[in-house]
Image (cartoon, rainbow, N blue to C red; front, side):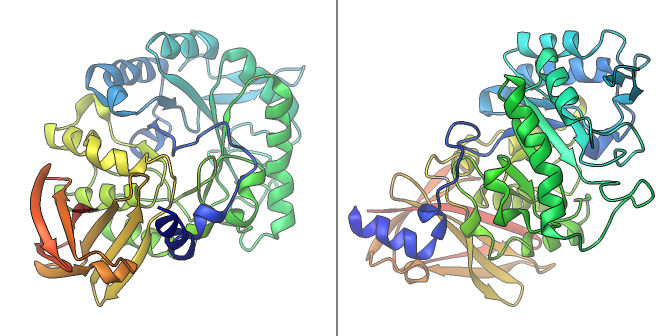
Length: 388
């Protein structure tokens, strides 16, 4: 056991990294967010219906607990500085909506920005952090996603190459306000990777975006995937790299399997972005695969690493708390390819290993030294290997 732990510290440095917050988000947050599908076309009916479906579909039982409203819920500010809710969209108000979400055994999230305006030109929180955090606490908010638009000037929507100290200062202000509010809230930093938040994010919040926004395109999510390489040392229980929300249900099934497999092995937050009220059975099956989710939610909290890159064939691996390993064999080619994985790729001295396919949900048998499989084009096979 000691040898195993030492090996993992060398191969996966996250084990040696200790974040300051050991209480919240000990595993990557799971939930649903409005933005990817609905943008500003949101209202309280959508939120209530989606909360209902999280429960009735089995997603809640699979681990999805946050119902997060993104941009466009707010208008301006009242004379006392408090934020105004768009009452045409949310006539019952946010407290009543949060209470409804809580009544389902779920948690409630809201969005703001560390700038003069949100990305959709609504009232944001720069200079109003204490007021907003106290308001969120009064409403019963459990999760705050904090964007970065208009953070340096009212005229600059998306600044580039902003200095780290400015980014951190803006996020630290809201972090301090949340701490002073008297309510524990997960704080999601969304500076799109500006200011290298992986270097300091664990001292400010529980997760931080590492890249720009995801879109339901192959080129988008695979580019984001590549940008995660080398960041594994900064993630762990209570502090997570965030490659943005899931697009399962918005891309072809084969790609969705690869996308969900890789986000799971990355220990990424699993925040669904599809219309869960109208999803296909196959989309629901992907989102609720408990064996794959268990890899993402493994309590050891190690972010997976790309171990092999052979042209458009890749192997990613992640150690698990029971001594086994999760492995994703990823094929970026358009056509099927054979991909193999050797135990020696992760410096294991095993002679034989039990292999289980996590998508087929079946044991494949005992293998000596390596495993080889044909992987469909633009898809992945995800396995778990255990010492025999």
